Amino acid sequence: MANERPILLVEDNPDDEALTLHALNRNRISSPVVVAHDGVEAIDYLFGSGSHAGRPPEVLPAVVLLDLKLPRIDGLEVLRRIRADARTALLPVVVLTTSRENLDLRQAYSLGANSYIRKPVDFERFERVIGLLGHYWLDLNETAETASRSAY
Image (cartoon, rainbow, N blue to C red; front, side, top):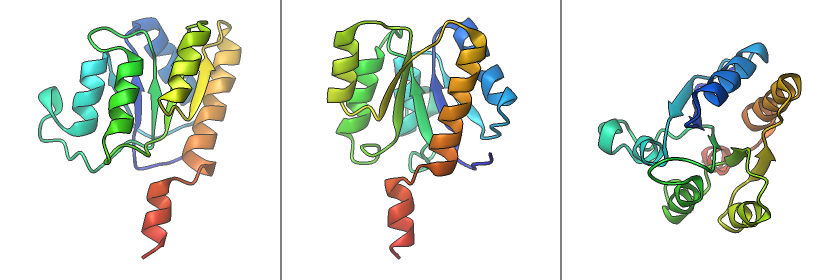
């Protein structure tokens, strides 16, 4: 799977980050991965501000894999800000979390999450889930950006 646009992984847990990167690699998902370790870093990356000042904000990731329990700005607030800005409002966002809270699930969907996946504890299952995510969002899914490019 080759996609020139990166995957934005928003994950503060180093073990979960390493597992996700390993699972992407094992599933031959060759898209570059940008890791943001908290909500502020994710927002800065998406909008080319703060620590990512100068990064062209019009070059968006193919998909955002967003944890909810993040330092500085939590994942739900990151999602709220993504959906509130016209530049990122249609960006695919997959919540990838350990949260078992039904309130988190309902809030994520009400804020516009495209998908909500609870991280499996078993690594083999986690690896399969990441492979399916990568295949779907990078190879099969048609984005609003794709539609607007083909309209011209």
